[in-house]
Amino acid sequence: MSANKVMKWLALVGATVAIVGCAESVPTCSDQQTKDLVEQIFFEDVPRSRSPADLAQREAVWLETVKKVAKITHQAVRTSAIDEKVGKISCEATLLVELPNYKASAAIEYTSQLTDKKEQWVQMAGHKQLAWDTGAMARTDEFKRAAAAVGVAQVKPAKTSAVSVSSKPINGGGAPKPAQRNTVVNATMARLVCGDYCQLEYKTAEGELKSTLCTEAPICKQWEQDPSSFTKQIGSHATLGIGSMYVPEAGKSLDSIQELEWM
Image 1 (spheres, one colour):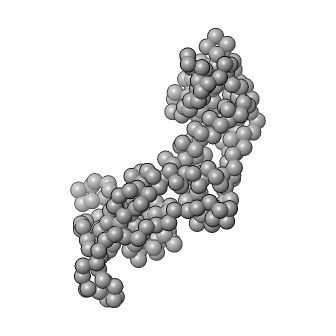
Image 2 (cartoon, helix red, strand yellow):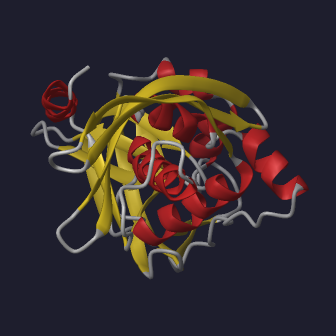
Image 3 (cartoon, helix red, strand yellow):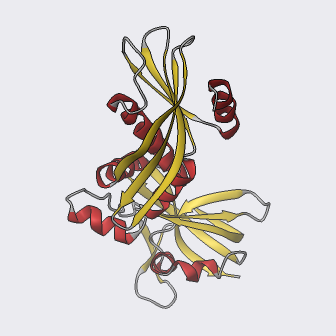
């Protein structure tokens, strides 16, 4: 594949770029610095398979856990083209990712080039589905247990900062009802994504897609333990009692379901 064709292909698939400096000559496809940038690009795309996006700090902590546990292997690294005029090397390889509960690979293509400031510029494509799948597998309980076994700290859900203001039992139980900040009527269940926290996505009666933490209410814990039980509720309507939960990793309080009543 020619260098021009590689660049056109990279543009079409939405390649990702990483830069590091500096070098006197263009690092080769198998140079360790090139491999490091390839892995940097890969891991930068792993968090994009997760939600919620507003937990940026928690995502960073989670990503560091994935980096420590994951084993990356570069296989069949080869040079596919050299453009001496612009000083660019085009490469192909197989990127193998191994987690305690997952093993998969993808064929990648990337280029290595120096900028005018002698910084190495690496552009890569073909890795994103592998990155997304890796993120999905790194949300499982099996991955968390494996991470704990090798001494990697896991972020634990924080306790709610909502204050109980009523002694009225919930659903006949003896626990007081947490203070509610908002009530959403006729919410349509859309999606549940669980990592260190679970996040429920729902549509309002007006059709607006919103999300809230779903970790404290009993039904949220049930869904986390048995995701298929939530799948059966997709499209169902409910009234949500939403309070707040302080998440130290995000440095702020986020919406959190305290109560859910089916309609």
